[in-house]
Amino acid sequence: MIAVVGLGKAGLPLSFVIADSGLKVIGVDVDAKKCDMINRGTNPIPEEPGLGELVEKHGGKNLIATPEYEDAAGCDVFIVIVPLFVDDTYNPDFGILESAFRSVGRILKRGDLVVLETTVPPMTTETLARRWLEEESGLELGEFHLAHSPERIMTGYSISRLREFAKVVGGVDEESGTKVYDIYKKFIADLHMVSSARVAEFIKLMEGCYRDVNIALANELFKISGELGINFYEAREYANHEYCHLHMPSTGVGGHCIPVYPWFLIKYMEEREKFSYSELLRTSRTINDEMIEYWAGKIILECLKVNKPLDDVKICIKGITFRQGVKQLYHSRNLALVKLLMEKGLNIFVYDELFSEEELEKMGLRGISPDDADLIFDSSELWMEIP
Ligand SMILES: NC(=O)c1ccc[n+]([C@@H]2O[C@H](COP(=O)([O-])OP(=O)(O)OC[C@H]3O[C@@H](n4cnc5c(N)ncnc54)[C@H](O)[C@@H]3O)[C@@H](O)[C@H]2O)c1
Image 1 (cartoon, protein in one colour):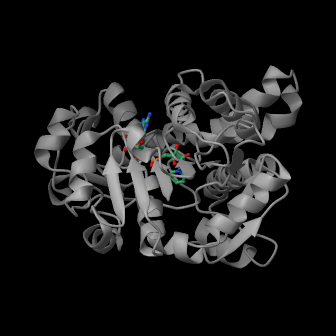
Image 2 (spheres, rainbow, N blue to C red):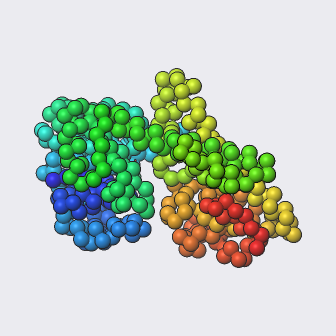
Image 3 (cartoon, rainbow, N blue to C red):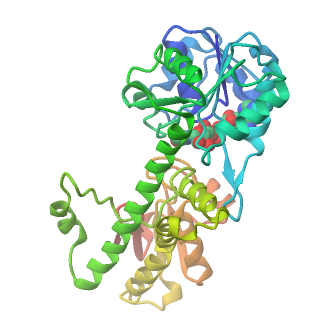
C-alpha cells in the first residue's frame, strides 16, 4: 500500500492517478477538512480538469485521506510532496519538509521506500531527508530505501501530465533506484530511471532555470525590439527553429516554481563562494522581476495620450494572477505591477474574471469593467488600449 503525504495541487492528482491504477492509497494531509471532503468524494481542487471524476470514483474507497500519520503505518511506500518555500532572503525554509519526513520516520519499517517529490535544493534527498528518517526510525539507509522523483505537473494539466509526460526516478543508492522504478512503473507509463536521486533533483532545477533564463532573454529582446521599432512577435516567429526556442515576453515570472528554483542553485553556489557560477541565473531573476518597472513606464507614457490629468486617468489592469486562468497570486508580477502603479499615485483599477468585487476589495483593490476604463493594460497579452 502506498502513502502520499501532502494532498495539495501536486499531491492530490498524483495520489488519485495511483488509486486509479488499482493500487490502494492512504493520503496523509494535516488539513483534516480537506481529508473529509476527499473521503466524501468531493474534489477540493475543482479547477483541475479530470480530477473531480477520480475523486468521486476513488475518494474514501481506493484512496483514504487522513490527517493522522499513524493511519499510514501499514504502508510500505511513502511519497512526500509537501511545499518548500523560500524566505525573504531566498533561502529555503525546510520546516514543512522536515516535519513531514520526521513524521514518516516515526512509522517507517525495515524494507520501506520513501520518495521525495517536492522540488528541493541539490542533495536534499541524500542528506537532510536521509538524516531525518534515520534519526526518527532508528534505521539506517539500506534497511530502508530512499529516492527522488520530481513532480513535473502544471496546474490545469496535472492528470494528463502524469499520464503522458516523461517522469524520472533516481535512488540514493542502487537498490533504492531499482525499487522506486519497479513501483512507479505500476502507475506511470513513461518512466525513466536516472543514476541517482541527485540527478533526479537536478533535472527539475535545470528545467526551471532554463525557463527563467529563456523568459529573461525574451524580455530583454522585447525591450530592444521596441527601441528598434520592430515587432518582436513577427521576428520571433522566424527566429525560432529546431535550435532556437525563444519564450514569450511577460510582466515577469510568478508562481511557486520558476521564480523560486533558480535561487536553490544561486544560494548553493554562493555558499561555496562560487559567485561567478550562477551569474546568469541571478541576472535573469533581476531582469524578470524588474519587468514591472518597464511596464509601469510604458503605461504612464500611454496615459499621457488620454485627454485628462495623469492621476485622473482610470487605468484597468486586466489579469492579476501569476498565470492566465489559474486563480493563484503567489509571486504574481501582475499583482506587483498593480501595487507599483498604486504606489506611484495613479488611479488603478483591476479586472480579473477569476475574482469577485468582494475578493478584490479584501485585497485592497478596486474592480472595474474594462469598458469603463480610460486605459486598459492586458497583462497576459501585453497590449494596451485607450477604448
Ligand atoms: N502545484 C504545482 O503546479 C507543482 C508543480 C510541480 C511541482 N510541485 C511541487 O509540489 C510541492 C507542493 O506543492 P503544492 O502545489 O501541492 O502545494 P499545496 O500548497 O497546494 O499543497 C500542500 C499540501 O500539503 C499539506 N501539508 C502541509 N504540511 C504538511 C505536513 N507536515 N504533513 C502532511 N501534509 C502537509 C497542506 O495541507 C496542503 O494540502 C511544491 O513545493 C513543488 O515542489 C508543485
